[in-house]
Image (tube, rainbow, N blue to C red; front, side, top):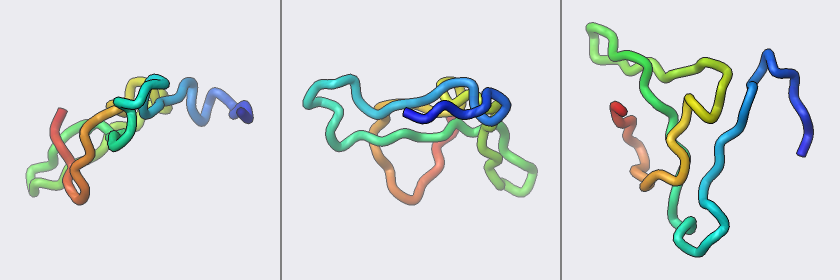
Amino acid sequence: MKIMNPSLDISWTHCGDGDDARYGKSVKRKVDRVESDGRKVLLDTNDSAFDFIPTAEPSPGTIEDK
């Protein structure tokens, strides 16, 4: 694994924990806020462990409020 400068991202996310239940899962980014026009702004704190939901159920084409 290549090391990145912590100013870009201080951690990482994953999909699965090394067992067969990890297949068919996804990684989803969390929503930071919803604008008055309904547009969803995704969370970006430069900390992937915080910004994403690991090993989530996939839902193509949707952004879920979490």
